Structure formats: structure tokens, C-alpha cells
Image (cartoon, rainbow, N blue to C red; front, top):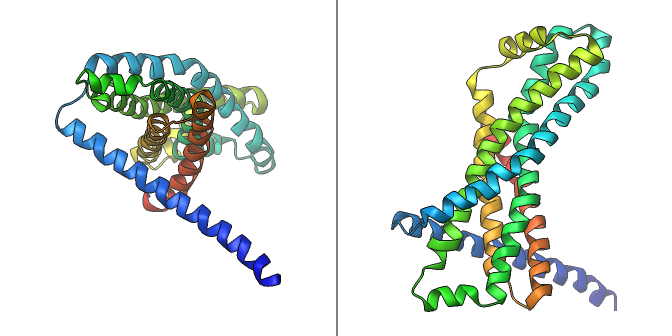
Amino acid sequence: MPEAATRAPLAALGRAAASVVGLVGQIALLGRQMLSSLRRGQLDRTELVRQLYKMGWQSLPVVAATALFTGGIMVIQAAPIVQRYGAHGLLGWGAGFGTLREIGPLLTALMISGRVGANNTAELGTMAVTEQIDGLRALAIDPFGYLVLPRFLAIIASAFFATVVADALALVGAAYAGSWLLGVEPGLFYSGLTSGLLGFSDVAHGLIKSVVFGGLIALSSCHHGITTQGGAPGVGRSVNATVVTSAAAIFGADYLLSFVIQ
């Protein structure tokens, strides 16, 4: 009996590990297939423009609101330390360093995952369970070039440009929060920001992360979307799987990239 009780958790752990490895392999194969379609020029540019508007432009309001509050929150958290040591001139550097390298791309990716990734999975999943994707194949239309590849590129581009906007607005929010809470004028804030940063490398650090995060969201949402089975309940399960997979992949990639990109 004790031996059986010991084997059960190990068996469950083994099944979970095999499931994760299988998922990673399937997503990698999807990425390879999309790169192959892109190399052959099988891309519907009209659909790409439509998805860029829907995924990128229409995401800006929620990204902007999140970024402004994020900048203010960073100043609120730093306020006790700034006041204790009188480091008002370093407020811009502290807020900018954390925002550009970490908070901006990470929170933007999570917002894109929740709004764009989940919606993309729901749309592709609905097409899959209603056999619309099979209908495209019957009409000799490549589903990857028409549906999947434009969405993949649009999510990556949306994550990148949304991060640029989020970084800028987060710094604006931090500057005015610093003026209101600590009496640090925006000019002093931006002076500390520009003099304390290492240079463009700090901006590039976050932007590289945003591209990687966007790719992970795109791969996860497209994979779970086109492999959906089981009708409406299956669509719900795929959306849930996309959100969980994307979040786990984003945090894992963030940890690794923080070491690789210096």
C-alpha cells in the first residue's frame, strides 16, 4: 500500500512532464511551419493589415491606461526610500530603469495575452470546430497563409509597438506622480532618467523581450486555436490553455532573457 501511494504522485508527475514536453514540441512544429509559409511568401497582406488594426490599434487604450497607472505605482513604492535618503534626483533613473527593462514589456505582454491571445484562440477555435478551416482547404486556400501567419505576425508587431507606447506613458505617469507626491519636477525627473540610464541598451533590452513575448503569445494562441476540438466547451478549454501557457512562457522567458541580455 505505501509503495502504491508513492508511485501515484510520481506517475502523475511523469504524465504532466510528458504533456508539457509534447506541447512544446507541437508549438515548435507550428513555428517551423509558419516560418516555412513566410519564406514561400504565403501571406495574406490584407488580412495582416486587418489584424494589425484589430490587435494593435484597438489594444492601445487598455495598454495606455495600464501604463499610466504602472508608472504612478512605481513612484508610490519608491517614495519612502526617496524621502528617507533624499535621493530625489535618482527618482527618474529608478523608475525608468525598472520600467524600460522589466515592468513595461512584462505587463504589456500580459495585457496582450489576455486581450489579443485569448481572442485569437477563440476565433481560430470556433473556425476549427465549425470546420471552416477544412472548408478553406477544400477551396485550395492555405489556412496558414490566410489565417494563422497574419495573426502570428500581427501579435508580435502589436506586442512590440504596444511596449513602446507603454514605456513612454509609464514614464509620463511616473513623472507626474513624482511631482504630485514628492515635489520632484518633471524636468528633474527626466534629467535623472537620461543621465542615469546606460543608454539605448536599456530600451533595447525591453524591446527585445517584447518581441520574444509576442512570439510566445502568438505561437500559444494559434496552436491552441487550430487544434481545438469538442465544440463550444472545447473552445473554452483552448482559451484557458492559451492564457495559462502564455503566462508561464512569458515569465520563464523573462527569467532567461534577464540573464542572456545585458
